[in-house]
Image (cartoon, rainbow, N blue to C red):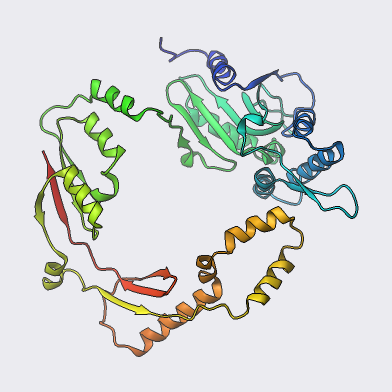
Length: 403
């Protein structure tokens, strides 16, 4: 039965049922008249932390530190939200006894999602300079991570987006959104869109449902293809990039009678070439790169290997610098940082090395003759054994056809 035209309240009840029955969110109730509604519900968060095995002192201290970051009046909503996200993602180091190492308290169990407390409340009244009431608020371990605004199908979801944006203003309820990571707006006629705090209306994205069984999805499409009239030709540029997998199968299922013609001008890997030929059939026409150079429509490919000194001058000094800069981090956080920056690839992409590479390019251009005009932008590619610089030529097109 169609849900178009049903009242907003009915839509809200149906969405609530989805969260409770299918997504297994715990229903917290209608919080219209509940006093003290917050983006960090102490009772719920402490209950989760105790269940996770943290002591009372650790849990209380962790909640205090989270609230301190969330409610910092000297920062913008964006900066408060960014600080909260870091704590949600990595936890907060808590030290409760002198002489003992700090232990990281995690507000969310990322590795075992089922151990978290997922809950939902409706009509959550927010007190402030101007009272507002979001339709639905999603809580994870007592922390508000999502806000949902629902509208009647005759009212644009743009109204819901603008309502959420106004709620985030200081004169309304900006304080509540310092923990919120997702903003949703939806109705029965336009579906659901989402963004995050501060996302402008035009940048909200449409929510797309995933499909667990792709083969079943394709069969469903094939059973009810798009109705087309006359001969239909589909021209696909850069076909080797998008037409070797699920997207091509979906397009063919939707348009079974269409003729697909592929274009590509990027040098193909052997595997890509084979796939494109298998998908589109043989060449209709080719225009080779060498022909383009001969016809003077593209420049020849200039390729020169250059070696930039990339040895670490003093590994001991780098280790000492790392220790000095990470004094405030615990062992787990230091290890994570080392994993992120400790690879040779990242060392080679450091600012000092980049400066040496740029200086070398500038020097090279100043001492060697270049053809005037029409030079393409140099492209840098980092390699472990040196830096490769190449100038990209224009495209030479290949066309594939598949009736």
